[in-house]
Image (tube, rainbow, N blue to C red; front, side):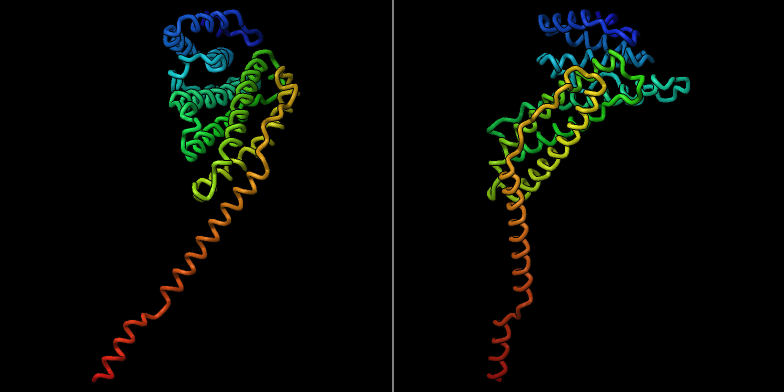
Length: 288
């Protein structure tokens, strides 16, 4: 099934074999480890971008289908960060495809490590505000790596690439949607008691989320033109309340003003003469 699901055919995908593998793992979770080894072994040996990409898609499918055992994978057992480099005989299509494979690998390896660490599952209402903010930042990094997965060249409009892009869009919808919801939830908990550091970090996360939203809008438009089926409508993600953003900004500015005032007062105190010592010296002179 692994061999069939990762064939050399650049124009077709054996979805039945992939579905068979997912059903098998769902019924027998312990089979995931040897299957991951089999997929990794096949990807390590290949020079075919189609085999490498199908192997990545097969691995990604375990996460997209919420396979519980997939969280134990961690760092991938193969390295495609330099896939295709040094191959002087590659065509324009294979060159673009190899870049695509590298970008997909960079995302999937990062994602697999993050979820293996359990960072996302450490997030709950009982977590400290800082822990929640740190986890949100890690998820934003995942979105950055997803946006970098982009086919270049008109000859990349083939079924295999479109199928891979559907996986990417599904991941973006889940991860970025999660980020927007969590930011909206955590902002009301950032206040003067939590301090400037957390307020400043929260403000940066909000700015990053807004810039990513603009990038994703363009990304969805690109995917729609490419013909990616699940990118035909640009989603409306949860918007961060403007009042919360204004509150954060005021919190950071107020804290900065207070710090500057305290520093000025401290400097003023240090410049004052030591009156007690001067008085004692005057008394001594009068006695003499």
